[in-house]
Length: 265
Image 1 (cartoon, helix red, strand yellow):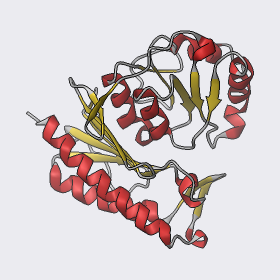
Image 2 (cartoon, one colour):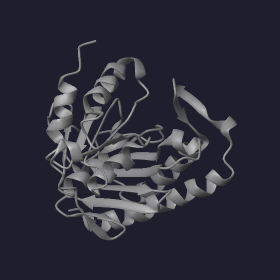
Image 3 (cartoon, rainbow, N blue to C red):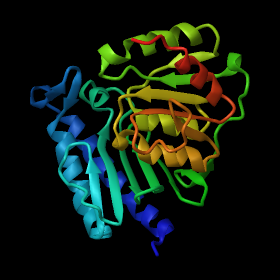
Image 4 (cartoon, rainbow, N blue to C red):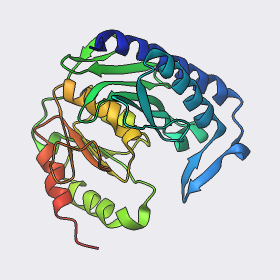
């Protein structure tokens, strides 16, 4: 039986150490060493080195676990547990010295999330939760907001790199929500955005074409903070998808309705 509380404590330390590495590397960051993986989707030597460090530390912590990683430095082969890692969520922000950016680490088995840790480097904030417990930020319990009225809703969404496929959805979301909700923002980091919902800073969040490493840790944190996470169709089994909604609960239907109205492409 895993000691999830102790594991989470250890993962918070590993994520924070990786975040400190990101912070130090940013001081002498060199733009010419950035590689474009896909159109407008970047990776740097910092992502890769951060991932190697995190994988090594987690391998020592739980040798029987495999890995799903953004940069592909480790793999998963039907081990009983699996770490899901984004060594630098918000790479484009990082490249441009813009907040926020994060280290995101989740542990799951074949069916559910077991723990999640997101360390937001710029604000020195460590969000974390484990199954069956509360959600925390730097040791203090956090909760989603209790906002129910759309006119008071503070919504966060993003513009993913798959712009050709997502453009109609993005435009419809803005058209249907702008002037209806209290405010709309984008911050460039899915992990941070979802955690901000968990902390009650935002009331709902949605994005498509994202990887498991982008949302897994933060999704569990929202759930343990009293919120709701589904795919765009409202299915609560979202772990294998790439279209995710996270909310405080009462405002989930607001984004579900807007996304259901997107015209077919």
